[in-house]
Image 1 (cartoon, rainbow, N blue to C red):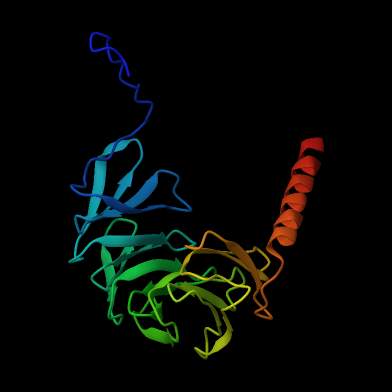
Image 2 (spheres, one colour):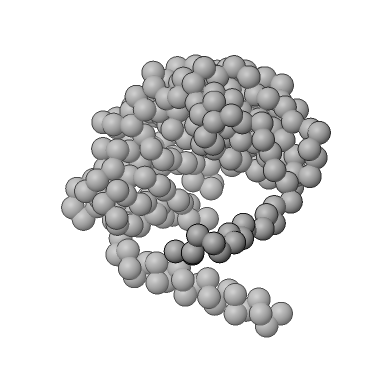
Length: 252
């Protein structure tokens, strides 16, 4: 510890912009895929904001949630923003902050939101063990995916848009048909996770899901077969391909 008489030098602030609209903790941040300065934030003050990096005079408050704004996501074309709250609501906004629609249905807080990679479909996981899918353009509910035994903590569409993967506190991964709502595979038990799932990512070719858990492990699952693969071997192959591609680019 420094002596009491020593001067305490504060760290320099290298940020290029500071946004101070929130009055509570921040829970969610999303950046527009088409506008490099447009940012959305949400927090425990029940508020969401749209603001622009480097434009201190531009901000739009996203009003209407009655509980913490827990998740945010821009559509892939950058035209719409979805916000999810612990009030169980999903709200859809345009990029000026105008409310387009309010999507209702879940009986618990919204854990996460994802957009379909090729259209204005929204997928959201809830604390009430369900996953909901809506058409964001007209606000209609397209399907409800039921089967998990605890809060649905992570999920996404596959990049080809043909399949849905969701993970839960019940330590299972479920693979769904988005049209029928049927569960194609349920991945659980040995050699899979022993505690609740916390995160999920899907390979760009829509063939593998990588999941993380409270048990400290990472597993790779074949989406087509529902089989748990050899995690170490698969990650090694992925790393090898990544390194090879970087090497090829360095030669260009």
